[in-house]
Image 1 (cartoon, one colour):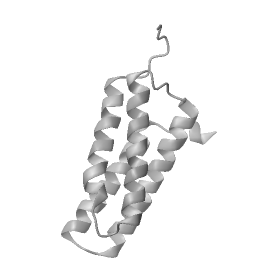
Image 2 (cartoon, helix red, strand yellow):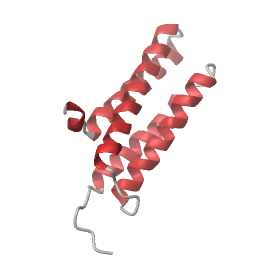
Image 3 (cartoon, rainbow, N blue to C red):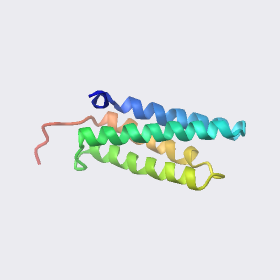
Image 4 (cartoon, rainbow, N blue to C red):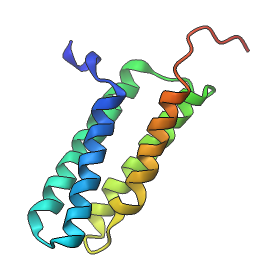
Length: 115
């Protein structure tokens, strides 16, 4: 199934594009960057969710807890961006989400953990 081919780069790139479009909206206030940014944010959240469902990371590992925390913040970002249209949620939340995803790459998945 093609959904198993989703990597961290897929949803990180979607979040990065959403952040870029939100920054564009602050400089050039038009409605289409907001809607396109929300679309990329939703696609990123979908890919992130599918990734977590297929990989089922353990929150006992740094890799799993960072990915899960970034997913929770991405949910808050998308909800806040839809509910509070005038506030730029992406500018504050998406950099944190991207940093957490980047940190999860630094602490890669470990299959042979012995606790």
